[in-house]
Length: 297
Image 1 (cartoon, rainbow, N blue to C red):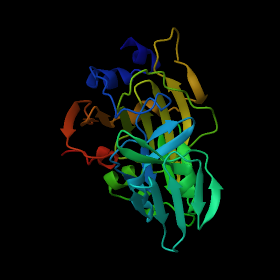
Image 2: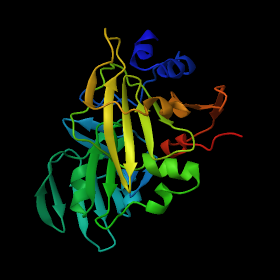
Image 3: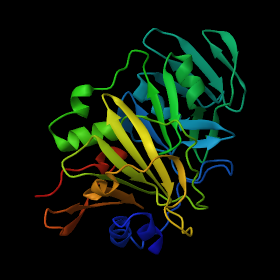
């Protein structure tokens, strides 16, 4: 706890409210996979998957069922162990389990990673398949989110700057975060499922994101989200804590008025009243989208 106290005074409250968070194991995956379950955002909306995507040898693997959210249709041939994918233009893409060669409209294509079966789920390389059908793919390392977007997709500016605070905050975290520095790397050895978004009161234009080890401050300008500062929450001597990039903003202490957290299947939050009183609340949630809630009256 003294770690965050030296970082900035307000972080003591954050740690106090969410202390005792335990680790939870995600679905088993290959040893080369990422330490945290990945989220997937398609055309500005977070989607739920029946199997957490993971990174294998530098390639992000997603469940074949996720392709339906891209407007693609797929079928699985259990005899040939082959996946056939089609789009609205009737382009046909076929992959065989464990084989590095795929076929697009009958033409052989060298894949960067083959489709395969992991714990009963067929996983396919996200970037390769998405780009094969004309989608843009961006992996944001800070929050470990895979963004897949149609060529003509544009963020909904009206939602981002909506007077409805919940809608605006949800739209804000749905933007891929861009950064000009090398982001810090989590050193957790477990597959912890914990993250927190903190906002200034009645504001959605900036937020602090924490994965339990690293805090990142993000600013929203128009329809673009930019990381302006990132620092370690590690117990290091001296003040401030290790900065990975950017400059600590002067408004940092204002960002911890409204906070929303997810930890091991439990959603919770806190709200700081004008007199300084902190109220906490828990709420049900089924997906990443439900992390942001309206502040209880």
